[in-house]
Image (cartoon, rainbow, N blue to C red; front, side, top):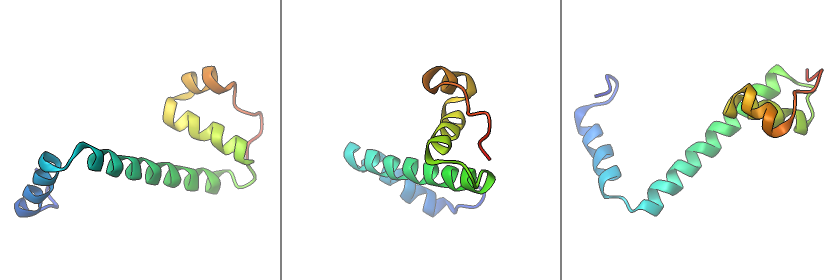
Length: 82
């Protein structure tokens, strides 16, 4: 399925997802979600080094929700966030 994964490794992965209890799958998905958010925040901090934590949170909302939904939920972006 993946060019960079051997069939044997893929079988192990698929077997895990087939047999692991739901709580274990959800815990792993939660960890991956947290890691993705941290990576996104790291990128935002690099692009906007002077942004406050609140501004970073709002910028993250744009990435996660899209600008329209983020604006509806959290209001417009601050005029200056760099």
